[in-house]
Length: 243
Figure 1 (cartoon, rainbow, N blue to C red):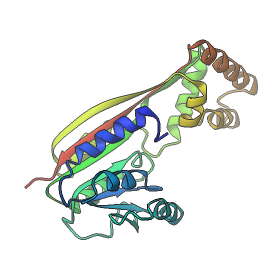
Figure 2 (figure 1 turned 180 degrees about the vertical axis):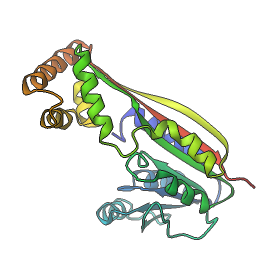
Figure 3 (figure 1 turned 90 degrees about the horizontal axis):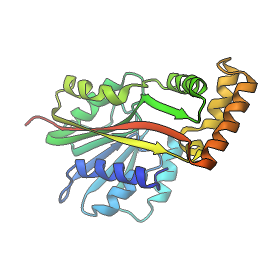
C-alpha cells in the first residue's frame, strides 16, 4: 500500500507537516517495519529519526531494512508510555495506529509530553464511519462495512483527533481530508481485506453463504466493467506545542 500514489501523497504531506529543518529530532510512534522512519531519514540526512513500536518482530525487520542509515534509530516501547524524557523531539507523528490503540488520548498526551515547545504534532487516521464498498448490492455492502467498522478499537478516531489534541493542549490545529478511492477489486482486496471480511460476515451470521457468494460475483463483474467502488477518508491533523 505504501507504494501506491495515494499513500505516497498523503504520507509526504505528513512529513511536510513536521516542518523538519537542520538537525531536527523526529519520532514516529508505532512505526511498524519502519517505512516512514527510513523515508524521513533518507529525505533529511541531518535529522535523527526515531521509530518506536511495541512489536519486536517489526523492529527487527525495520532495523534490517534501515541498515546503513545511521540517522534511522529504532526503540521498543509502548506508545502510551514513551521511554523518553520531556521535550526531547522537534516533531512527533503517528500514522494509522490510534485506530487500534485503547485509550488513544494517553498516546497523544505522551506525544505532546516528549515534544519541545513550538514543536509539531502530526496525526493521520482513517475515519471508518466514512467507509463504504459498492458493487450494486447496497444492503450487502452496508452490512460488510458495518462489521468491518466494529473490528477497530476506535473506528471514528479520524474525526476525533482534533478534540483530543485540544484536550492535550495542542495549538494551531489544522485538518485535511484525503479521500481514498478504489476502483479495482484486486486493490480493494489488498487495502480492505475484503475476502477475510466476507468470510467473517458469514461466520458472524451477518451474511448467508449464498449472499456472500452473490456479493463476490457482483464485485468481480463491477470491477471488470469499471463500476466497482470503495471509499474511505483518511484525516490528517497537525498542530504545535505552545511556547
